[in-house]
Length: 306
Image (cartoon, rainbow, N blue to C red; front, side):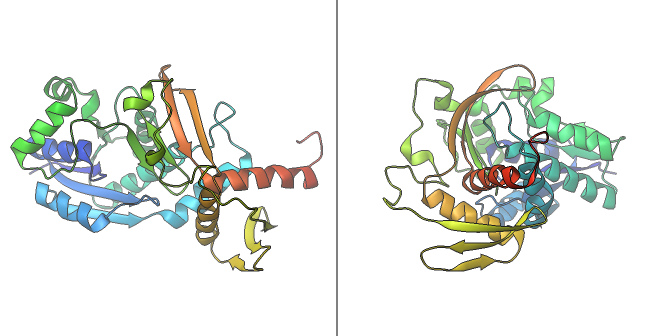
């Protein structure tokens, strides 16, 4: 009987190659896509995974849970990494890992695979969650396996394999940088950004306008909090009121923050393994709420707590 594996699938080059590689190793593969707010053609990703050979493709909408159980607790705690980074990828990965485990346990799947490398932080985020909630799990991390590394030494090998195996890809040999997106932020790393003297290209940004392109006028809002959560936003000029779910409020803040050039940072940070890595981040809604929470704390907390 074929062994089953569930793969954290994005639809990109790496995880598409990994999907085919797992199939060629004899596994029956379930491709799992977690919707955490990224701009993605999920229907096309499903068609692609099935065409490659996945037995099942699962697309789960995780946006509400991501906002309620991950983004807001992080913002309420004032969490900043190295005094600059509001977190984003590091919030989404544990949720994705939890969803993979939940599906695996519900369907008797004992193997979980991901496309993280042995140099970055995602391997830790995924695998700690796997081991916590599924201690007997077998983790298949191809980018840490000698056989896979010997076969794929870089992007050229991935693209050649995709061509040989009939994997449909839109990627090109020259990928200027990597992009990771969710509701909290969009991050850009690697490629041309590894040169710290190179300014990020203007066309790279997806969530925010530059200060030069933003409206040359103020845009004022009031945020009403209840029990530590924003429940209503009022636009001063129009008196328009925005309320609803936490997801709806956060999505609105992302939009107005991005339109007003809020939330860009360009930093060099420390990875778990000790390497330094440049990251460029857009976090418009998160930046607005981080500042709002700081102001709120000055109103309601004693100085010993602050």
